[in-house]
Image (cartoon, rainbow, N blue to C red; front, side, top):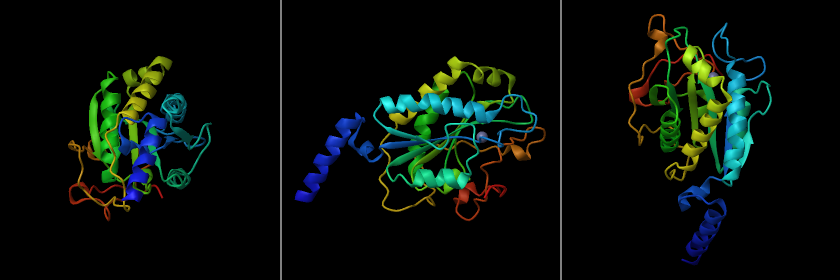
Length: 260
Ligand code: ZN
């Protein structure tokens, strides 16, 4: 009883220090931001005009101070234009047991009309965070809502902390590329991502790593695998890997294993 009381007191104190909305949030004191790609990995598709790696880094660098201001310790997997292997990014996130992992990306497709914002998660525990970030980003952007989706991307599947990957629009879409090239828009994206992180609902405390569960708290929208749609293949392949073994029965998409 005494131990329980002591823990309660500690939680409350930490909660006050971080100004987190609910005590359940005190578990997560660090945000690891992962700017997609970098160095020789430009991101996107061959010949793409706007380099994804530059845009992801810029949004991440804008996001960092917003989260620090809210009292979080913020770590970036890269803060310059360098290549960091996905395994190293995951290890970095997993080295902070009280972390939330947020990967920042932009999308691309061979069909220039492909557009919109989508957010991915894998573990059940990450679903509320994905929903919160997605709803904030979509709410603040003029782009289409492509939904929150569960996918076994390497960086989501291998992390042992809540992890979300947000695709902030298609750089191959002329309109969305134009948005992304605006400083004001990238700042707005950072602000909305921060808002989504800060306003997230309580994330379930983990008693073990249970990313096999298919129970989620968000309505999954139908997934359109554009690789099988003629002339409209999304080419965001850096993070796709085989999910067949671990994914739920409803999500046994045959994702290629190009990333290990
Ligand atoms: Zn990317």
